[in-house]
Length: 108
Image 1 (tube, rainbow, N blue to C red):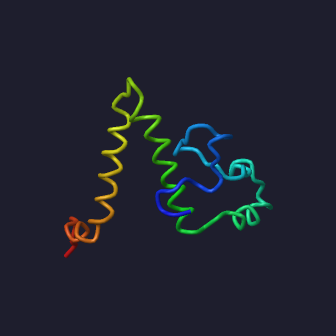
Image 2: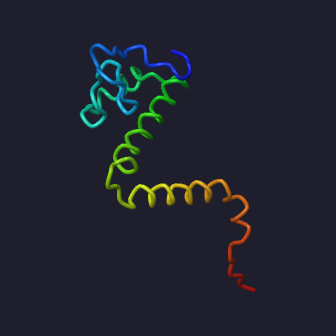
């Protein structure tokens, strides 16, 4: 699978139009249904390659887009979530500079 190609598991005759928010691989037990004793085996079965991680992030982005941004009568929830996410991200990347501006109370 190269960059920009369809997933290898996608078959247009079986799945219909391509949906970037859907996982076309073999169905697995959801994390919420995994028993504590089986958690290690469940984690070992996960694909941890960079392509798989990019696919997870891409599917999550498209699910969010389809739910909050692209509906015909979308509200402000998606825009507010995006703004709060950006604020949090920029706070984290600027934290080393911001921590020097703390107000300390000195006791002499």
